[in-house]
Length: 407
Image 1 (cartoon, one colour):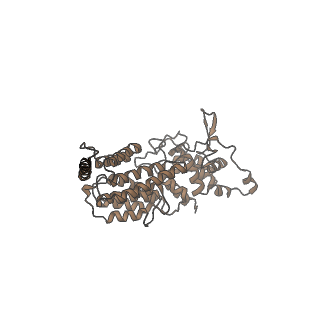
Image 2 (cartoon, rainbow, N blue to C red):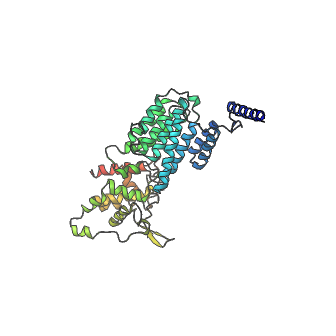
Image 3 (tube, rainbow, N blue to C red):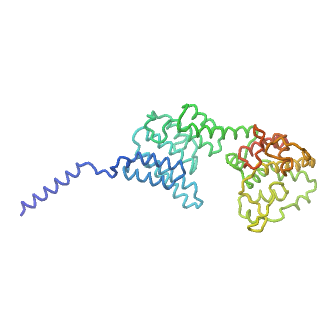
């Protein structure tokens, strides 16, 4: 009996030894079911703003190999993007913590220079999204340090599964500077991207970004913008609330208009006739009411048939024809010259192929363009119904300040 028991124990021991020496069973066996494929696909989905689908791909990559660092880096970006869109502080912090934890895992699981490069770029992207304390600085946890570390690596670009080239580093650093409103540095980094390779994955994106930032830098020449102005400068389209804020913050319109009224008692009586329902809780409420207080044409409340009320509509995009009306009215109020309002009435021919002399905004369009505050296209078109972008708005503010000696 004892002999049989001994044989059984010996047999059990051999099984344990054999199982210890055996190779682990692969979880993912299909040719395309591998961590590298899922990681690359997840990064493509991130680029398409398909955050949840990207997360699924990175999680599958980690299922196939739980120590595949790039997948951790991908999940860090996913959580950072989720945090960026969360308004609730608690939920946002949870996503921030998850993003930072995944970055730690990515760093711990690095295998080779190419995976380290992906980790550093992911760190730049995460920091740009969540903006921890001193996130941009050249410190151990700052985006600038990660950029330098990425550029110092000797990588085989053919093994960079998604980024494909070292020029990805200055491109994403350029986006970081753009997000931080460091426009000159952003322009330099996009230029660096273009200079590293004549053709590459990031060239077209960098070229578009460079043109955008270069326009902002030129628009800002000679003026210093406040935080509101910098935030508006990067916008693809400016809305009515933005424009009200820009006029208050950058032109100091309340102070300037008040300076045209000699009697203080009359100034004190001025106020908006009412508070439109759609600005009661808006972050630019005061700026909207300032426009109403001074009756700035182009930024008046408009009747809304759905609510049967006059609304300011702060989040509605501002068209170029509306912008021209605003600029004209500001000029009239600042100069006191009422003739500006009718300077081009009666003309039979328009210099713009898309604006007729009978259009309500014709006079304003000519006032804005002849003074160099707004620019028509090379074709001569004014584009009255196109939305005003941030750089155009800043450029107009710059010229207006110069014309009126506003500093």
